[in-house]
Image (cartoon, rainbow, N blue to C red; front, side):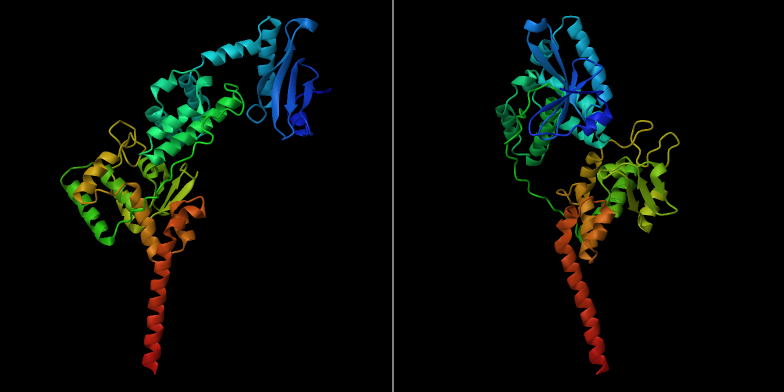
Length: 392
């Protein structure tokens, strides 16, 4: 039986073999590390409440990586303290599992994992999906009783919203994996497995130059007639002129604006830190936005010190004025990219402007860049031909 002080060095040095092996701590009796043939490392305790004639039990403390060796040691001391007080950790966990509902486990997941380890925008989306689509009848059921049929039924009810259905399925899958890692459900019990996602049809709506003109006039009219605040008008102009994401403009801080260098330097975006380049027109819009002393945001909302919360309602009014009822806010970003692509700019350059982390995301504009390159070729060849004929 291998023994050593269980710490970062000994855990990192513990190698997998053809079958499960164990490393036991030489100072805290009953505290150990299990190394599986696949290389997974799990902290655990081993104990016997009833002496030699009793049953030896093992209880998982947690996986290495989620817990450090010292964190696992602290938790193991608590559990072994229960054993010394004649309380069985395995029975306590079994009772806790039986009593824990899906709703309480989801709340724990959102607080301890989502809010703590994910970006605020991602956490907000996780909470929105759970709030809107996780049925109350499921929330009140025991976590261990949730089966694949329950998740499949939930997914089926959202079949008319395939994108939302698939995002909810992905979030729930992460939740159940987390629950397994926290020992709230048994291993290999993710009920989201083998549920086929709906096919998602990519919606590509690009504004034409004529439609851009109508939108520009609608913005002018909305501002003149007082139908929208100056921050709403500015936000839409900046979305058109930068290709930025909706949330990037809505949550923009003045401290992230560098007009002298014509840059927006976002501390946080979907792809971490990001630089957005500003044209003359975008600089002009930013310079015209009213600045409030008690608000650090560029696009101010109704609450003191807060950014604009909802751009959708005024956008629906403005797009109706421009006769663009089928255009979403996100389509302004697509349109920015489409105009760049149609003029022959490379996918790499467009991806850099949009802040795409992967080139495959920009590939939707490939057909437009081909059109632009073809037009450039026609222009160049026409010039060459004209000069050659003229010289002849």
